[in-house]
Every structure is written in structure tokens, then in C-alpha cells.
Length: 383
Ligand SMILES: NC(=O)c1ccc[n+]([C@@H]2O[C@H](COP(=O)([O-])OP(=O)(O)OC[C@H]3O[C@@H](n4cnc5c(N)ncnc54)[C@H](O)[C@@H]3O)[C@@H](O)[C@H]2O)c1
Ligand SMILES: [Zn+2]
Ligand SMILES: [Zn+2]
Image 1 (cartoon, protein in one colour):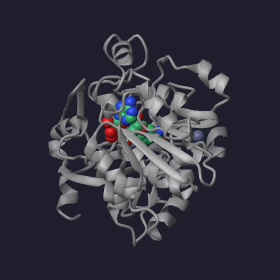
Image 2: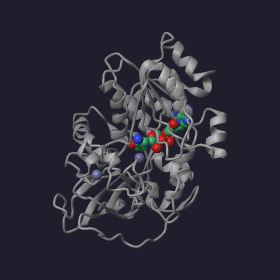
Image 3: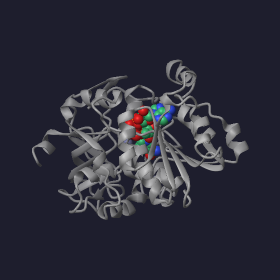
């Protein structure tokens, strides 16, 4: 997959990736998803997204080759690769903040390295490809257990840990009302996981009916289409005895719809880093003293948010990129025990060669698409 500029991706032949450091591995990709985070790149909203880069931070693959210092992996291992690139040794990795590694992204002191995610996240090529170079191979990549379906495994590279962490950061107490903005794969998984933390009521809000229908059955959750509500915040207050939800999760990020002014300022005139509509709604519809958990992506550019309401309502705001490696042992157990069924979100299996159609479909939310998986030729031939 080769990014050519906003709304233009295509297939090109690129050189075979090479071991550049003794801790690298080269992985032959078996599955690679497109994520809502890729849409920010595709739309041209992430600074320093350079033509010629390959996206893809959610992939599984077979290890082809390892560098001289790699000890835990060997050729032939089938691995799932967390989207975070983390050194495993720095002060942040030591605290299991694998999304904030200090070594893997020299461009930033905020986010760590991410596969296929612009030079603001380190400039690494990603896994929407046949082969990919995986740095710090002893840290992130995890051998897929024999019993696990690779479709579940690829969902553990991002969607499942991100949804789970969204619920975890919400500090949900038994019986809490949890509202999730966004019914994409991440919001769907956040709603599902909210129950695991003891929620008493889970509400999901989006504008896409087929996604709301899915999450209504899958989480399960109460669902509302914000296009059918006069005022989302007013509605959330009304449905919670005028208190607000205990916990609100933003699973939308900087390309939210629903407010013409935000869209104009943030997405048309580029006077702020995208539209913060869902975050406004989250802050304004959570109860006083409540928690707003943000996993929706906001980039390095500033965005106007109602900070006064955060202060005067006494809110706690918690946010981060998911720390995939920290959560994997727990989530693998949840898949094993049938508590989570991640592969149910996969609606489309698309040849890698058709990547440009896949982006168009996922971006425009056509054909009831929830999660598309790209399959390179070798994976389709059963290797
Ligand atoms: N923090 C992390 O580690 C992490 C990891 C993965 C994805 N993300 C981010 O999470 C967000 C969701 O990812 P996804 O893959 O589910 O994306 P997606 O694009 O498939 O889903 C986003 C959904 O939000 C809906 N939406 C738009 N405006 C809304 C609004 N104002 N209120 C409610 N819903 C609205 C859209 O209709 C869409 O269904 C993205 O911003 C993505 O970048 C973060
Ligand atoms: Zn992702
Ligand atoms: Zn680190």
C-alpha cells in the first residue's frame, strides 16, 4: 500500500524491507486491518504524512528473519504485532506505558512509535503490505496461541485493547451509566467491555444506523442516532434524571461530525486540529465529578475544548493510546474463555491489491462495513 496524498492510496512494488538493527524482525503479513486511525491519515489530517509511506498498524504475520539480538522469536513463528512500537526498557515502557515509549519515536515527546502512522509517530512503514520490518522484536510481537483464530489475533493488535482500555480508564463503578460516543470498532468494543467493569447501563451514540444496530446486539447497548436528537447533551441529561452519565467515552476523535462550526473551524479552515464535537458532548454530558475517557485520536495540533466545564464540574479526564502489550495477557484469556468475540466485528475480507477500494468503502461507511481485513496474496494461498 502506498500513500500518494489525501484520499489517494494505491498498490506499488516497494523494496523488500531489511533488518536494519539487530533487534529487528522481518514479518510476512497474514492479515492487516484498516482502522479509523488510518482514516485520519487518508483524509490528510495528520501532519507530516508523507507520500510513499505504507500504512497499517494492525497486523499479524509469520516471522521470516530475525536480527542477531532477537531471542524470543524465531523464523516460522506466527505473531500478532501490537500497534505500539516500544523499546521495553525506557522509563515509560518500565511503567507499561508502551504507547508512550521514549526511544521509538525521536520526533515527539508525546506519542511513541506507531507502525504506518506518519512521521509524527516515528515514520515507520506499516503492515498493509506483504512484508514489514518490526523493530524491538522481543518486546511487542506475541506468538499467537495454537487455539486462537488469526481473525481474533489481528483484533488484539489494537481494537480490543483500545476498547478495553477506554472502559478501564473510565474507572467504571458497579451500576454506573456509561455513554460511548462512536460506534466504530473501537466504540463497539468499549461498550462491550464497559459491562466487564460492572456498568449498569451502556448507551452508544453515533449517526450510522447499521453500526448502532450492530452494537445494540453485540455489546449489548442502548443506542441513539444523534441526527434524530435535538440536542445530544440535553438528551443525555434527561435520560439520567438530569444528572449526566457517570462515565463518558470518546471513541470518535478529531474527525467528528455533528457540529457545523467545529467542522468548519477544524476540518475546512484548519484553524484547529480537527473537530472536537464528540469531546464537547462528552465533557458536557458527563455528571459532575465524573470521568471522561478519551481514546479517539487527537493529533499534535491544538483543539478548542470546554476546559472551564472540566474545571467547574470537577471532572477527571483520562486519555492515551492503548498500551497493547500491558493488556494482552488478560485479553487473550478473555478470548479463550469466550468473554470477548472480537472476530465478529470483521465484516469484509479484501485482497491487499484492492486496498484503494477498501479505503473508499471503509471511509464512506458503505456496504455495512465495520472492520475490513486485507489479505496479501500469500495469505490467500493458505501459507
Ligand atoms: N487511543 C488509541 O489507542 C486508539 C486506537 C485505535 C483507534 N483510535 C481512535 O479511536 C477512534 C475510533 O476508531 P474506529 O476504528 O472505531 O473509527 P471509525 O471511524 O470506524 O468510527 C468512528 C465512528 O464515530 C462516529 N461519529 C462521528 N462523529 C460522531 C459524533 N459527533 N458522535 C458520535 N459518533 C460520531 C462515526 O459515524 C463512526 O461510526 C478514532 O479516532 C481512532 O483514531 C484510538
Ligand atoms: Zn488501529
Ligand atoms: Zn520504551
